[in-house]
Length: 483
Image (cartoon, rainbow, N blue to C red; front, side):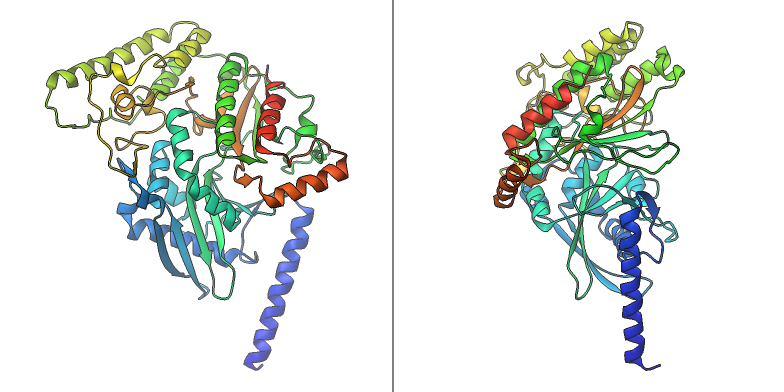
């Protein structure tokens, strides 16, 4: 067989493989392994190799900084990688120092992140989530399903980079925000092909072992119905607003916290002028033993919420030029007092503790600080004034609160489990909750789409509406279903 005939046969096999893939994708839903027959297998192998090389060759670029500058938000690292099949790819990582800070803030260990996304053994493939979403984007899980790689359009990625500082600042004031946590932004390009952008995020539905139902809620009803699985079928489906009409989020003591936090997150999304975002909700019934709160588990939860999690040391004190030992002694005494008070409160009623947590520190202001505020360089952003500070630890770190001049809002008692920022125990269910897909601006394309949808549905209750209307309707729809 000549070389040209061999190339023609190879191309035909690739076309057939892609067509088989599309045909199977149209008729199945759920999580499937990305094996060698998958049309994107080689590209995903390149991503795995590139991510490990990124962290190995640039360790200093993957450490959370005390202070971020404008250059960190514009940082781009380029890597050339070759797959075992012999194909070459150009891989880029964007704003790596910023995402390193976010990973540190949500307490994700760098080694865990690398080993999840880029296992040392190439035989551990990604998993593809084939959903009923109409976004047209691809979703890939790390093999342990802790992280998601989602493709996105270039203009959405560029918009996200433009609001990255505001996104980070929102977490400063709302450390228990429901917004999905993005942990990395990458692109990959093969010769003679279009560049693909990937966002890495925490999976809101992690761990997935017991999850029974999943909903994607936008607060509108037009084209928002999904046929549920027939009895006995286990295919993963994400149900929508019409499926949720007669459901309730039975949050009990967490209701007030949830609505307050959702309001804060919606206000942030209104401030950046986006719409078409969703609230993901997953749930499974609580076991009887999970409904009973033991004193020991309550103490562990309080330590997690107050930043005294096991295996973590107290944060070091920043040297701001004063050698005042009295200040250090006073801060250490405050930390010890806080821990002692927390353990004493564990014997009180659980509802009283939730109220205490939501109000604690809210009356504190930077003027009451015993430490001097640290100066900031011009053009710099300070999401983390200390290494290893995360959204959980910062709740009890008074000096961190004072040095940044920030006032933390709406704290809650976190569960002593993985992914605790997105898990809430209600009355009868454990809920997995988070806000996703907030990159859509109401531009020319959306405005035209609105006119067409209005004509088609006679001004129906659809998703393409201006951000202010979308946000208020979104909040009200969800608030009406919380008890």
